[in-house]
Image 1 (tube, helix red, strand yellow):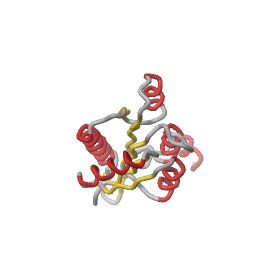
Image 2 (tube, rainbow, N blue to C red):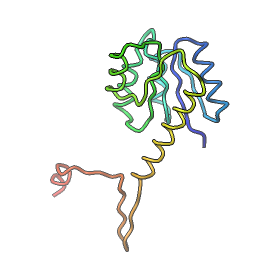
Image 3 (spheres, rainbow, N blue to C red):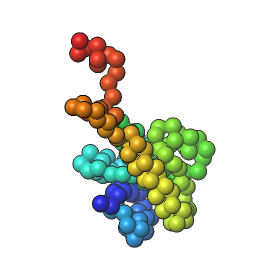
Image 4 (tube, rainbow, N blue to C red):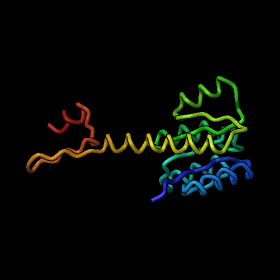
Length: 154
C-alpha cells in the first residue's frame, strides 16, 4: 500500500506540481485547495503525511495543523509556505509541525524530507506497536492506561 499524502495549498499550480512530483515518487496524493477542504479530508480519510501551506484563504495552515494534532498525533506534518519569518517557523513547530519548508523549494529536497518523515513515523509506529505473549496472556504495548483509569476499575 502506498503512503497517503495530503497536499494543501491555495495556489493551484504549486499544489498540482507537488502532487505530480510526489505521485511520480510512488505516493498516493490528495490535494486540497483550502483549509476547509483539508479539514474535511482529514476527518474522512487517513493520511500518513500532510503538507500544509500557512496562508490559506479560509482556515490558515496553523489552524489546520492544530486540528490534525488534536485528532491524530501520528501523522507527519510539513509546513510548506512562503512565510519565512523566524516566529512563523517557531509557531509552526510549536503547534505540532514536524518540519517547515519555505518557498521557493526544490522538489527533490521536499521529496527527501517527505520520505524521511514517513520512514521515521513508520519506524516509531512499529517499535511502539508490539505484542508480547506469555502462555495464555497477550500484552499489547500500544494500549496505555493511566493510574486514574486503573483505579476506576477497582
